[in-house]
Image (cartoon, rainbow, N blue to C red):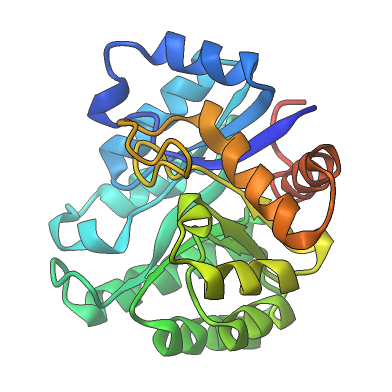
Length: 260
């Protein structure tokens, strides 16, 4: 059985001292691929270097909406350059966030559109962060779709079935992290059960969101993505091996530049 963790913050401080062990445990757990996610220009540089070190790791480069207020004048140009690196398979994470007020919303919208436009220009998929702003994200995605086709994923999805349906219509994938396993997440599990098999992805969002039954473990890490996969298999009425195979195939289709 092979699993694909499509979203992990491997450059975060909790992994600084033992990254090799984290990657080794992931491989032992059947996680054959991991996308290391950038959130700033410096973070994106680090994810690219990590992807160079480990054959199973691929990089995503971008500016997370909550970090955009601190962006320096040259940071976007750094992201554009990094996007050409052969280890980079996606742009992001990008998106919008109304939960935190770290970045003015118009600045978030500007950088979200920059990522979407770059994706359409160079052919890399984008990774969307969305918190308390489903309507705003959909408006931005609709605007981008008027320019051309979209390729991307709604990461750690916690939105409504209506939002998921429109994202699917726009051509996107839907990814679920540890929150779908939480006891209170019945509504989210119902959404997960409705996603077409060929648009479903899994992730850890590590070091955050450790899944049930290891919710108390800190930090979360890619090896634990199997718990999210098992939960989704149960709610979708399929075998774990089939769910793993399908989501891995979906991830390879989306992140086509990945080292195979």
